Length: 345
Image 1 (cartoon, rainbow, N blue to C red):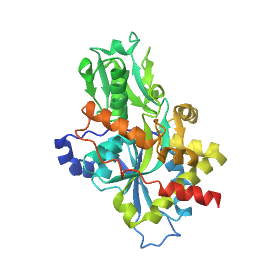
Image 2: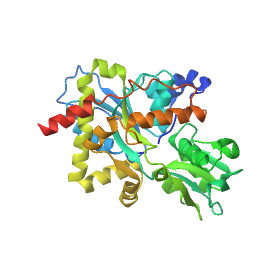
Image 3: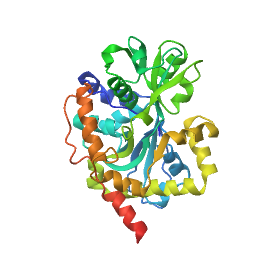
């Protein structure tokens, strides 16, 4: 269930996008073993990366739950979350795990993406961690603060600064990839860092370090989703349904087999089982009922349409995107509704 970020929309970055993704060495692909699916069915490429809310997809793969739900999936692991965002934008993925912020940014940039499932909300696993001697957000003024530019932790940092009446111009912002940012903080090269679990574990290795604030202080600000291309929905809606069905089957498996599931997820995260279990408190996995609520209209951050409107306005004000996207077609609840109806029948 791990970052994740609000994607950078710089023109030069977009121009080099396809080249960068095609050359990236850290994308790992699984080999589909869907013996009960027609060999003529092209696999759906689904990207995921390091975040507690997304590690369950590793369980889906290892326990052959994609096959059980009759969907041919090529599950692709990305060491860098931003790489997975760019891969979906470039059409190199059919689906990806990403935040609402990032999806809004991508849609604003012209990518036709649709949210079909809520995996979770971050309720503490995204953190701003500071060195000894920094005791308030105001103390960040003039300090070196690292975060991966365009990620949700960059967004979280801006939210905290705004709450304290500051802007990014008031700090020495260091745009560094999340894993490298955590390492730079531990090495004493920066005063504070914005990271998400499991990179928070690494950041806390610095003596005297502590949490300044987290996503827990901004409820609903960082929801995480399964996002698909509209092309996939139009051409293979039955497979999108199968992906959603697989997710909930995976949650059932985890509930029934917690020891096995935690071992799989901890291994994918590169941490111990006990460390992985500690992430649970910072991530709220959404049930089918909570999915239905999130897709419904509302007047608080529990409603994705409400949250998207608020986040879109903030991204423009913060200069993270230049224009508001059309949010009307960014959500498609038919798949979670169909799953819910099947469960009741």
